[in-house]
Figure (spheres, rainbow, N blue to C red):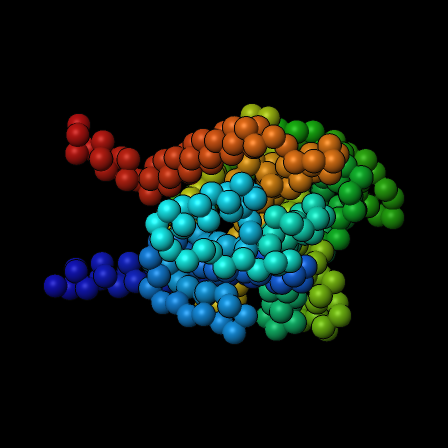
Amino acid sequence: MEALSGLFGGMLGTVVPFLVVLGVLIFVHELGHYLAARSVGVHVEVFSIGFGRAIAGWTGRSGTYWKIGWIPLGGFVKLHGQESPEDRAQAEAEARARGEALPVWREGQSFAEKSVGARAWVVAAGPLANVLFAAVLLAGLYMTAGRPNTVPVVTAVQANSAAERAGLAPGDRIAAIDGRTINRFEDVQSVVRLRPGQTLSLTVERAGTRLTLAATPERREVTDRFGNVQVIGLLGVSGGVAEYARLDPARAVLAGFAETLHLTEQTLVALWQMITGRRGTEEIGGPLRIAQLSGQVAEGGIVPLIGLLALLSINLALINLLPIPILDGGHLLFYAAEAIRGRPLPPRAQEYGFRAGLALILALFVLATWNDLTELKVIDWVAGLVG
């Protein structure tokens, strides 16, 4: 009974933070679409958190049906007239054949009749909302808990490390890496981690003199405190102890947006390295890993959980902006083509695009799930049963 209670408590400690994190991210994303649609006069028929049958639902004064679905792995907003005129005519014909009332049509409030610019704004607003949400969360952390900060001064150099071979010495201040200004020791870490095996040009201040050193971070597989294995670059230097300094509202907002841009850049660099084969795809995770991470981070308190929420919000925005049909980025790609051609792409071309996009998304989902099962040792457990 005690073991069962412990198992139930562990699952509860993972599932609840996961549902909270995922629910908040989905709500913010779909709220961006919703507000943008209302701003250009498009009626929103359904606002759903989750898929499938509704656990709870209500109709608002604007006529939108708000619901929570029982499958919490996504969400959507159903825009009035999102389908093509042909689809509308077919739906009306089917309703007449069944002897049902014709679907209510709100003239001037349909998505399909809006300009390509207005439709692109509605689609792009979801990822934009996630980016803004991340910046606001980080700004809030910097105003309350404070922002971690250390000066980029080397306090120790490991023997036989990349830093020693490059000629770095204690007391050196790293002013720039590959021409990019370094303000904090955390900036050094974030740049080096993403450049394993790549030669970097370090601008170093030593005793009032500026030097240029070449360093090649070593490739190293590391396991974080959550059990995730990553290939990172290591320079072999130590810096000062991080201090948390609370910022005033104005500086906190600026720092929040700056950190959001920095995290976006890091994510895009890592994604490009995966595409070009310089980084493994084992770091791609899905719902299982997010659930595990949410539960573990939540044990550390609200501050790290908010930090995770900001990071995941940025990732959600970037994933949705990938130029893959069925994602927001794919729709924007179609709208760009429409703007250039002066008319939409042929229906058959859009259909093939959506089919290809669906196949790619399913493949990525399978890969992420496989990585999750491998990371959580489920594959090893099954192999042990079979073997």
